[in-house]
Length: 598
Image (cartoon, rainbow, N blue to C red; front, side):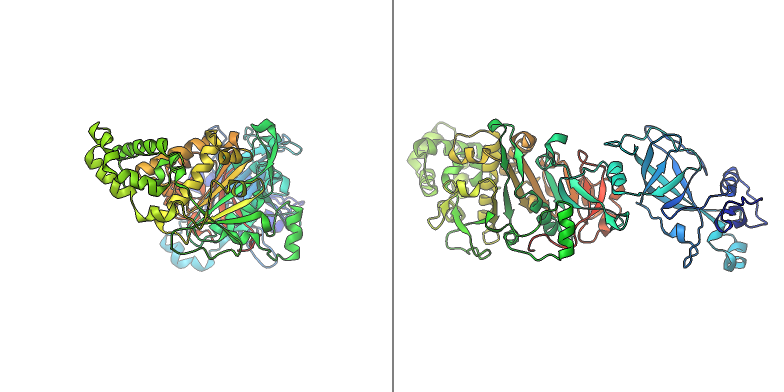
């Protein structure tokens, strides 16, 4: 075959890579032979190969088949240098040439095809020629999944509508702008990490990484923090580390309220903290100066929150006391909140008919004692004379009353409601639910029953204040500004189980989540068991931040199918972000350090 004098003979005489005595025997072999017989111009450093047609080149609305041939280009130290540079998951760009647009895609599959008719499994090949066989006898191709199409200067990408021509160059991404355009990533917002493939951050230009932001600009649409976020992963994969870095970006931000005359207000971040970890966000944390400069350039917030973080610890009778942050405020749950949230004393044991009876008793009690205490309610339920009208009328069956008495008259309730050593949360509301404040509620010092009462009370106050317009001082205070409610171990409080208490709280938060954008309420649910969270709540979560987890868990958590196989291998800090309103599904690598104390 004649050589093209303008082409480097080291990499272009592809025909010479064939075995001299072997001839193709099938139509596919013939097409492949013709493919590799075409001389390939020298490839630049970022160029991977050329669009090929070993079988077909097609583009449709449902599926496409775009394949590129990766030549055997030797380097000084590596005889297979070009082929060894590509990996599944790498992003590529294919300029159309006949139009200004470029196709942005990802390598979906890599494969080798035998260049000749002799099969690798034949006796002659395996035993006689094995020592002579090397990579020259194989053609390597990469199957490309076309993600989007754009042209330089366009503000956003489009769907892929034009097919690349055969022999078009395919190359690696060349700039941060190409990655952001191709994946539809905002230019700024709430920082989550760096775009990555295979656990390594993408580098463009002279070693720059591509930051990934969650949209936070009102001019380009509602801030996505109010469409709710899930942070999920197995134990030890960095959920708390990742969440702290995420939440630090929210602190101090202002958002325009649709209500309250459209005023701009700072966020009140409320954190449910079962493991006593988040109070450390207040403290100063040393970061390498070089890392600081990089964070500043990319608009990433870092450093301790300081006095704007406050810790509120519930008091439980004579039980254990909170021993975390030096500065903290003891509080108690007033029984008067049960008038609004009757499920607080239902526990998980009451069935539907028993719960209906409890509601009647609670309403009757508070009609007589608007500021009644738990001890007064207990005396009311145990008073046979006061219960007689309910049983005689059939409103409450005698056996139902007995069951209620056993369940609502509990020492655990005596120890959590109306505790004299703590200030009522309905009196502390201006400190707890205050603009620009981070309020942390540690619960690891509480018993299981007390923890559940405290957490559900705080969560319900926020949900109802944001959705029902309650005529109380604390509800009006909460409604004044944006609220982000972060719930660690969320599966414990928004569970799938079918108890009446669970149904009540799930219905409340499904409704609150649906109105989050309008009411400026954002949920951040952190869990290692996303499969245990109620489906109705999960369905309202738009932003999924998924760390290492098993495949089945990934399916339940909403991981894109293309990442399910690799999720179990994700190391700490490596994550997938699935946020359809923000970008294409993408792997990102979080910071290797925490921006606050951890």
